[in-house]
Image (cartoon, rainbow, N blue to C red; front, side, top):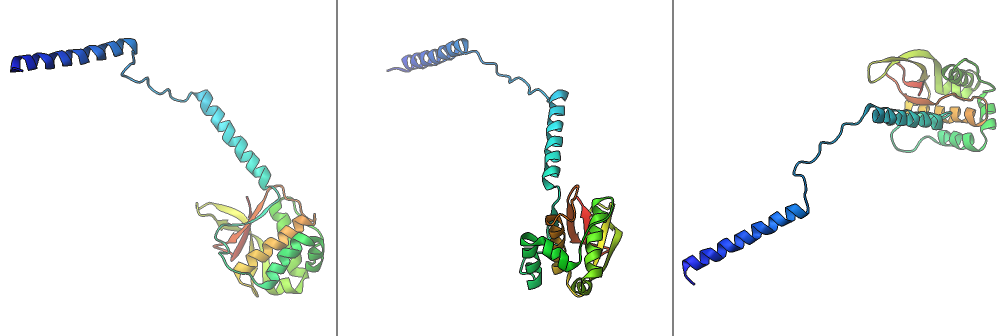
Length: 202
């Protein structure tokens, strides 16, 4: 096969390939440029905002009446025996636990004031609580964002902060379980900057 014949065959092959491509384009026309993605409308954005608000509202409702310990406030490991015992009683026999701690009722116009009345009643009535905590009061605490908020400052004396936080959570949970206090929202216990232990509403 001479060179001229070879060139003709190659040209013919290339021509056939091009023709096939043209036929495919005509039978399946596809735009090379993709249509731009439409930006979300203000209506869609409002729908998303409403969904987030509803989700946040449901979360607040589900957390109502709960006592929480802030993440990292107590770490890991075992607590002292009396702390564990208080936790068991707060679940199984909260009314008896409240009676032993000298807590009969809660007073105040909001969750923070009611919680303070519970803590103070136990400290001023029960000898063991008086030995474990020297007192509690309403004070100010600075958050990580630099905002000043109203909190309950609790001052442990015969107990370290870790066990003190856990014992307070059991005491307050027992008050809720016994029906002595009904919270509108939820409360959280944490280590403080200005006070060793702080309790605040969330």
